[in-house]
Image (tube, rainbow, N blue to C red; front, side):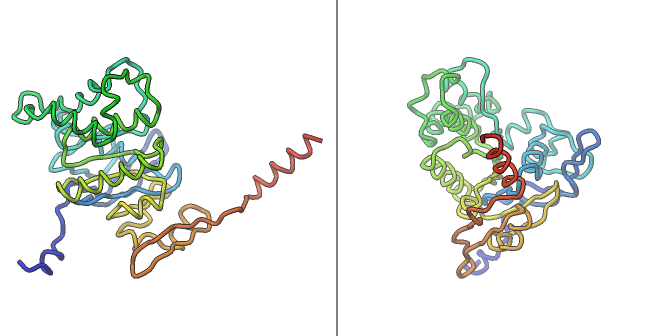
Length: 285
């Protein structure tokens, strides 16, 4: 096969979602969701608060029931699969990484290896645990109690557990929210490298549009529980789409099909904000 032929080969779909709808009570949270996450790629879920990103991740992981549609993760349906089966094909880092029980950091990361107990993969446990901690710059925390860590440190430990689990699909809900800029770049660069070099599929919820543009191969943009755009970064990142979705003027700097930066309008306030400032001035007189 020639290099040109190889470049045109469609990567394998490891996650396939068709006609997915999710409701809680009478409220529809997701409606008619269709997308794929491919081997060797980072898929970014973007959209405003309340768009359905975390709900979608919860449905994919099997933590939230669906009303209709299908989900296929490496041949497994989260609804019909055992906990062990799911734990061997997908790992999940939640938005809330707080821990209410006292565990040593290394023991928390070791939990990621439990799905492989009694298998040939178990022989890699210690090396993978240590390597995962090092990869997230958390090796020096191994002997610490998890409850004594800062939010950013706990996030890196949670990611270490996910990495140690060694699954073909990795799902991350705002993994960089509590991290400083150095660790944000390290974490996203690490996930991009792992996806490209090992062929796993990474699905990540991100609010930082510039970070998503830099590290994601595929973007799924949600608003009001529906997908409004799905494709490459350049396809999804247009002034019109992002400004409409976020309800705020946004300019996308693009050159030769590459998104260089996303720039929201600065220094503008809404009428409600102006009203509050005016009332505050009156109350302080």
